[in-house]
Amino acid sequence: MTTKKATTAHVPLDTPITRGEQEITEVTLRKPDSGALRGTNLADLLQMNVDALVTVVPRISTPTLNSIEVQGMDPADLVQIGKEVAGFLLPKRLTEPSQPA
Image 1 (cartoon, rainbow, N blue to C red):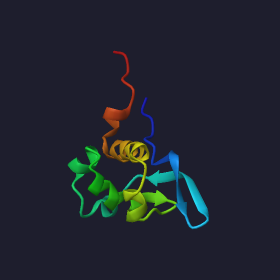
Image 2 (image 1 turned 30 degrees about the horizontal axis):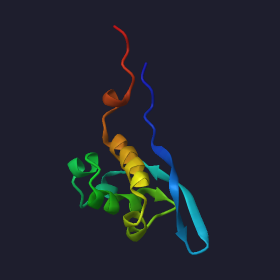
Image 3 (image 1 turned 90 degrees about the vertical axis):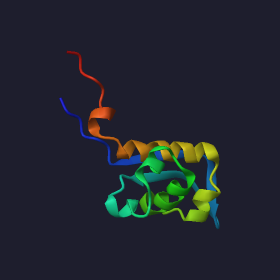
């Protein structure tokens, strides 16, 4: 049985981002297409390189975070976001539970 791989991920933030009077407590990420990955190295994203995440996260987040907000993010939140982004890049066979033989 094949399960459909998620195309979005909801990440609750340990430390909310303040934007004016708005407080962002959760970010939704969508699976990036090739255009959202332009100018980045996929290996850097898989390794959760901060510069690569600062480039890609604003392109795939809702609400749309800007690069300054991503740079100022709590490291624990950035790790959670990086984990989700890296997960989007893995092939299905590596993310599906293994079936007994």
